[in-house]
Amino acid sequence: MSTVKVAAIDLGATSGRVIAAEVGPDTLRLETVTRFPNGPVKRPSGLHWDLTGLIDASIAGLGSVGDIVSIGVDSWAVDYALFSGSRMIDEPFHYRDERCERGVQSVHSLVPFEELYRRNGLQFLPFNTLYQLATEAPERMNGVDRISLIPDIVTFRLSGADVTERTNASTTGLLGINGNWDLELMTRLGRNHNRWAPLVDPGTEVGAITADTAATTGLSRGTRVVTVGSHDTASAVVGTPMLTDDCAYISCGTWGLVGVELEAPEVSDAAREANFTNEGGVDGRTRFLHNVMGLWLLNECVKEWGADLPSLLAQAAALPAPERLIDPNDPTFSAPGNMPARILAWCAAHDVPVADEPAAIARLVVESLAQAFAEAVHTASSLARKPVGTIHITGGGSLNTLLCQRTADRAGLTVVAGPVEATAFGNVMVQARTAGIIGSLEEIRATIATTTDTIEYTPTTKG
Image 1 (cartoon, rainbow, N blue to C red):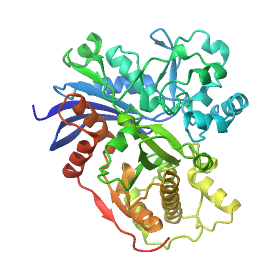
Image 2: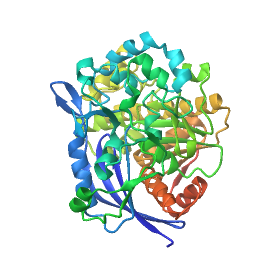
Image 3: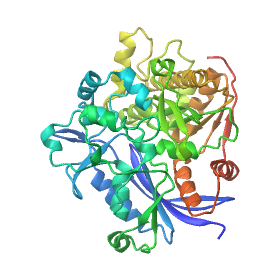
Image 4: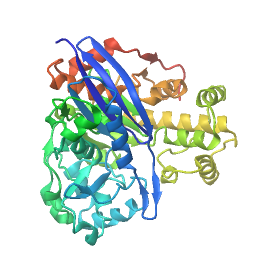
């Protein structure tokens, strides 16, 4: 058998999809069999996800993938659901819900951030899982016997296997930099570690699909469920064709995850002060990166304007580059709703001139993202003592030619854009490796490089 057929469930912050794939050492073919919307749902208790709906849509999609040997699940990180037995107590809160801020002071009063960083290596983000958990009322936790992250919930629904995949668990703040649960930290925070399922690595066969899943989808009962890099960025980094050791990556979707791949975490004071994070990667590698707000700002603007994005970017590209920029990571831009008005208000408060026109605002956003990306790449290189010669941009951002070119210009480095489908590639490739079809991570990336198209951008101007 030179190829294998697998399916990926890929859940993003704005949409989900089910993908059928044929994978081999010289083969990589994807077909999106279904796509469905995702987004925050406002309820009296706050912003939530409709995870039940996402799971139902995913399982429905599996009915169209054909004969496959396995299924792998990836999603966004940090969010979780509480369970009593097999019953989900409530739909998961959304990481943009305002409750997250309340947990920060509670956690830092027990464990100062400097110590947290030495223990878990995570940059400060107010929505990290340990801060969210700190907002949970004791009476709400009394009936809880299981806490599970988003992709692990889907895995459980498919297979009945209760596990916690390690790359996504590394974003909770409750894993030590050795990749294992930090039981002492959990005790100090008053969070019972027995509520978390055992950790497993990407590439673990957790079992066959349940009889119910088989009956609903028409798949064979022998179809396996395999853990992949279930944090979607972990899969995206696997799916980035970095063939040399001097590469940085930008996984650019709703968020822009900017960093380098390391053999071990970097938890120096300088890394903490720069707000860089150490997240688990496939094969025990470390994703040393910084979160930049990403395409969220632009997408929210386009939604407000009802604009055609390609036309808008063409108009933006014809404008001169702004002399002053916005900070895309400012908390002002975190919540959904009327992003153009918030950008204009921020500019007025910070004396940043910009015309109240969509093209001008779009150009300002793109330039600001490109500058943030360039700075993050150079900071990662310096902190990790790892020279960078090439930046790989994957995900939806790789289609934005203005963003790619301006990132190359502002970084003074070659940018290789693509593949768009890096997350899906990483997901299905780990499944193929588990099936014995392909070997090392280096072979995976070489296959992606030879079977997909990329575009190279060289610096043309400074800044």
